[in-house]
Image (cartoon, rainbow, N blue to C red; front, side, top):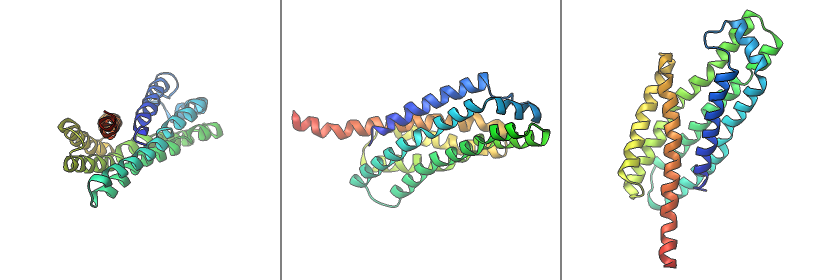
Length: 219
């Protein structure tokens, strides 16, 4: 199940690449008028659907990885930080997934009505996704800090992985201020990307440590 962490990174990377393509080719301009936004999302229905699917794709792999992580942690440490970390991990993926689902209705609204009023609703719903990414910075921080502390207690990960976890957690908390200052969204987005990279690295480290006893026995 720890290998699922690698699939989380792979599927997330595919989703990020598609998002760049979407914004470069089909997504209405950020300064588009409400009518232009409604028409733009109406015409980009297929791209929105594919993008939403790719946003959901890492979720099952993340749940499997978190299950494996819980088993590993319970073997070496105990305490309330473990359920807190796993619950936070679930929310880290669930919140953006819900945001993606909410934003996915924009093409349907645009197809039904391209008036200025409908366009204003479309633009508002399109803004839910960035806010959900920013909001998920709180559970990401809980997971990162809790797991870093637990790994330090168990001696399962090196100093670099722990310190980077704390740094990414801090970046994510700063990114939650996107609710107040929209210009801080790049921090939230960067934190989310680094979080996935950290999880993938953690999966590799834990998987490698899990296979070491077997190799020693075979040797």
